[in-house]
Length: 520
Image 1 (cartoon, rainbow, N blue to C red):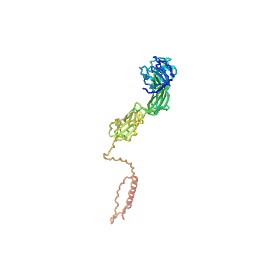
Image 2 (image 1 turned 135 degrees about the horizontal axis):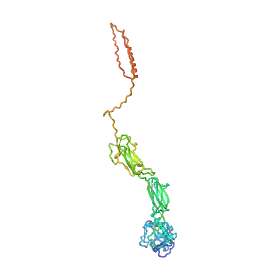
Image 3 (image 1 turned 90 degrees about the horizontal axis):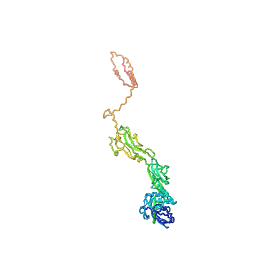
Image 4 (image 1 turned 45 degrees about the vertical axis):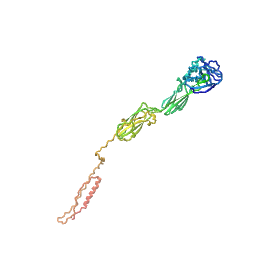
């Protein structure tokens, strides 16, 4: 299918070549002298030029070299390199068995041949002959012309063909971006040919996008390709996708053109331009995900009120990834305690709906090992009953949610996660049921030592009384005081006894003084 058409007028200065020239004709105007090459058939090849176009005739009979002065209508059709170019039978006659001008695989070395030797074709006769003969090697008509060997016997032609084959496409940029953490390496910088040869002398433009730079801190770099792969250091500055784009400038043209002449055989050529090739590679600087397992076990299946209740978590993993700075990744575990229950809770995939945990703790782990819940974050006392722990590691608990390979949540009511807080024992009741125990008696203070007893002084003797003569007619009716009754005072201390003793003594003396006496 034709991809481009344009009209071109050639005047006398057009230099044309004849593929099959039977008549002896002298080139006119600016035409170069036709050159012939030896093949198996009596056929001549020549080179035609106009402007910066250099073309080689494809076909059988060619009368362009003997054309009189005047414009020749030409249609230019472009084909991508790597495309089989079909024959246009309206402009190409002879060899009816041929269906194509050139195969797809031959367009790559043909483009390389024009790339390296275009500017040398008109340098001298040997280069004209050798180049024409080399181009013919890639056409479907090769081998159907008579023998005309270049003056060096084809040595230069073989050199041209060898270089064209060596640096022929299709081309590739085998980029690779690898590394861990912040240190990355870009390898395979350059262009390889179809024969795995590195193409030197090209301009390479590199650009980094994402959280990374080249070693010097830049994001753009220009250098020349060499005959070997080049490696460059990159540095990641964060997580995310990093892309590196390499553009190679200055490769052989990526199109082949057919000059279809209205009255003469076609010319095949490659435009005097270069092509470019771009390759983009991506790399994620994301940290590797943590893949681990854990088991749990309460410290004691039975505890007393006020006694610590903890849970032990054992974490296992084959490897533990690090961050960009080679530090172990941190993972948050959540430990929730539910209770109290009158009996052991039934096993279920999740806690009953609406049930609120008594305690929620967040534990941060940095690798395999044993971890224990924080006893300082527990209530001072748990009420009697059954309790159960539920431990989980979920994405929403993490500072960086992508750190986990998967979520982990243990079941509710696991036997290994359930413990009981025992009820305290009842106090003894010696007074029997229904009575209030007597408060403990206070200890008696030590007794004060008893002071020595004070002896009362002897009672004074009464004065003598005159006796009444028997014949006395009158006797006093005054009675004596009643007899005294002695009563022992209560024991007291030494300070209280002294005033009592004095009072008793004074009372006795007073009684003696007021005692009535008998009249004489």
